[in-house]
Image 1: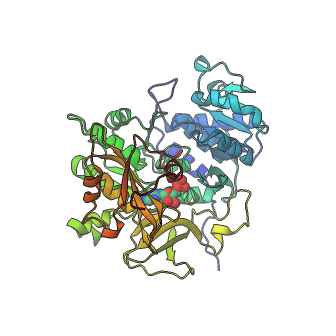
Image 2 (image 1 turned 90 degrees about the vertical axis):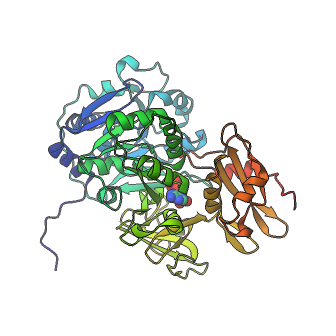
Length: 543
Ligand code: AMP
């Protein structure tokens, strides 16, 4: 017997309607190249979203068309999110930091019909456009006064595109499984793969993201997503915040500018923000100077790579900010787990608490986890056993775009994440490593993440990475690569001594290499692949 409740599809369109009706005066603040301090309301925003939907129709963009964005975090990108998705098209957010060949692959694989681009990327696209035969034209995200002279075919200025159109629009009644967003994995091997989000998964995640044990969002919050809007929908914050009627602050292009981000926190009253650990660390460094504060900030979601314990503790002890250490991936839209206390863990103290804070948290309701051994047998949740982490859930990818049915990582209804993890009896998960980064020494595994976390806690270390290097006896041994704090010269011996008592003795790296910087991926993570390439000729002195 079916229930007798209204059968309304889960559409992103509902988020927009709700915000406009119930929070019309809530503010959206943004920095763009042409407008250094822009602000308007949800009512203004969604009136422009309808103009944009009319403009997309007028451009002859079919339903289902992929419409690409190469854009920073600002209000126009928010308008694109909603207008493209709610009119039945697919908003394909493109990471502009990718190499040219990856950009071309992605644009052509997605068959983007139109590209909406920040003026900053016009020169790059002028170089590439002749190799993007399917793109019908380029809309530059600016006003007429700031429109650059460009050789891009069919180039238009965003504000002029919108201007003639009506603020009324009949949103289509879509099936909730209709695709609404597309984001390619920043895959380090092979071609990037497209993850095609739908209205249903996006809507469900918008609800989950706001839950008290997740980001705890309400209409009283002011949220500044620092994580780029081209990186998995800025971790779903634009949808989740709109859904609860919170204030949104978009920091524009300078997503790593700690001074500007700190200013926005204070001037706009930002209560919640989200970024990768490197950006969080830059904010901490900036805020260490006397007289600087992050007073309004209450919660900081940090994920994308393991957040060092020192970062979590400094935010808590110096600024009263609760770090929400989260784990996820593009294939999970991206939210998988998040570390918030339970009644039990809230009582933890001392070393037990420190240990606990390094967990990436519990599965968010809607996501299931399991860990398996090499024979695919499920491992116990005892906090000790670690194995391949698998997930399934309401916003987890079933198949990659145009690779449907290829099985692989999705074979048995569970998605193999490529991460190695342990889970404790209370469901708290701890990432040991990416499967390909784990160091295999004498048949045992060493976690590069644990070693890196220990290393960055050293006061003379700015950034650290650990990679496995071949060893004649042990197969692999850990090599520590360090960027020292400015003006500091730690020695190899004092750095290696630092690990004593912090990790098992046989985990301590065999050597240290000092570098001026570490390579990062397009999403701001340390690129182990590139680092391994740089150090391919390195041999341990003892080997
Ligand atoms: P991406 O799809 O580019 O967002 O990358 C997802 C990958 O980032 C995951 O599979 C993990 O390897 C890594 N990752 C994300 N969050 C964390 C975290 N909190 N701790 C450790 N690794 C993480």
